[in-house]
Length: 262
Image 1: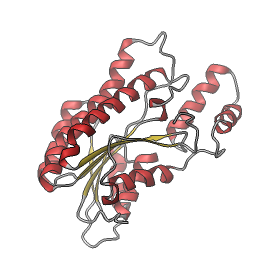
Image 2 (image 1 turned 90 degrees about the vertical axis):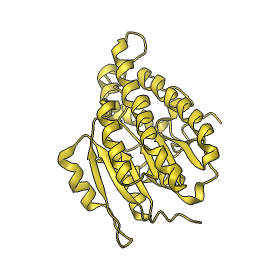
Image 3 (image 1 turned 180 degrees about the vertical axis):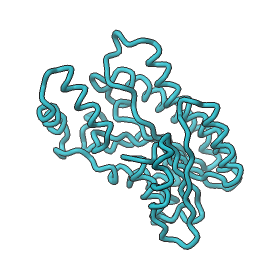
């Protein structure tokens, strides 16, 4: 099985923590040059320096950018791709705050669409030309199992994630003839700051203890535990590899069996 990413350049978003950081490490371990993209300029350099370099000559770097500022994001990534084509794009961003659809202000939907759907589109548009020229392209969007089964209490997230999934499926069909794949990885409950936010919010709204909320969430997972970020990153890395060249347009749950639909 060919998992070798030597000579490939990966751009990983949300790469200073959680699934994004684990993905950056996994791609680097397979030989890719990795550029990290996140807002936290104070830690990006440190994280990039610490990435694995199993292959001679591997070069890792970083870009500080806010996904909600689409014009600045576009300019920075176009400049990156002009100097060094991006062959692998991992779209990953923290989810919208928890809450119901009913009673949510329209501004919350607009902000979520800008951070996820529009930012993903801007990034893809910036790197696809280089993928076409070099004959290698992998786009993986880290979204949520809510695209298969909406999750209670995540109204804005459910809505926005579904839009990203539909966008990705359409893009996958358009780019398939060029050998560029587009896939979605759907994490379930994962040991990240995001899940801590969901637990805290649920506990505050319901009056339950954090322990009770956690126990209820774990009980809904057949494997009876949350995922580790590295487990989700492994699925992403496979989809980015040459071995996954004939897989495109799929939604891959990495959720310990929580999703009940086929």
